[in-house]
Image (cartoon, rainbow, N blue to C red; front, top):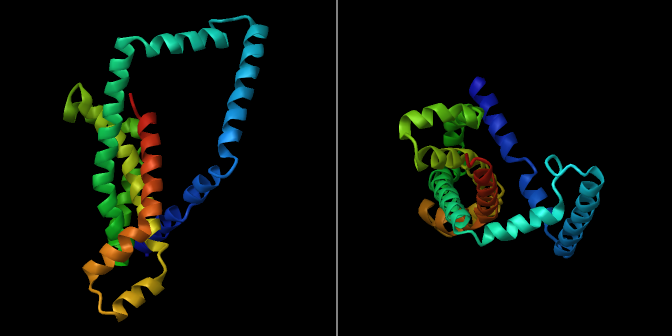
Length: 216
C-alpha cells in the first residue's frame, strides 16, 4: 500500500505543469514583451535609486551598468566566469547521463517505476545544502563538491520530465509498432526516445537553471 502511494506521488510530480508553463512563456510576442519588461525595470530602477539616494543600499543603475561593462573587460572576472560555466556544464552533463536513462526505464516500465520511485522520492526531498558537508568530505576542496551539487540539483528534474515525456506517448504508437513486428529495442529506438524528446529537453533546460542556482 505504501509503495502504491509512493508511485502515485511520483506520477503526480511528473504530471505537473512545468513543461506546459515553459511552452507558454514562448510565443509570437515573447521577445517584444521581454524587451519592454527589461526597459520598464530599468526606468523604475533609475528613478527609484535617485529618489532613495543611498547607493550603498540601492545602487544607481548607471553605476551598475558601468561595473558590468568593466567586468566584461577584466580577464580575472572572465576567467572565473569560464570556471563557473565549466562547472555548470559538467554538472549538468552528469545529471543528464544519470537522469536520462533512469527516466527512460522508469517511464517505460511501470514495475521499475514502482520499484525505484520510493528511493528517488526520498533523495529528492533532501535540501541541497544538507549535502554540502558530505560533499566536502567525499571530494575535498575544489570542483568536486560544486559539480556534485549541480548534478544532484538537476538530476531529479531530468528524471521526472523524462518519465512524463515517455508516459505522454500515446499507446496507439506502441500497438501499431507491435502489430508490425517491432521488438522492444525498436520500440525504444523509434518511438520512446523520439516521442519523449520534448520532456527531455525541458528537463535539461530546467536542470541547467537549477545548476546555476546551485553554484556555491
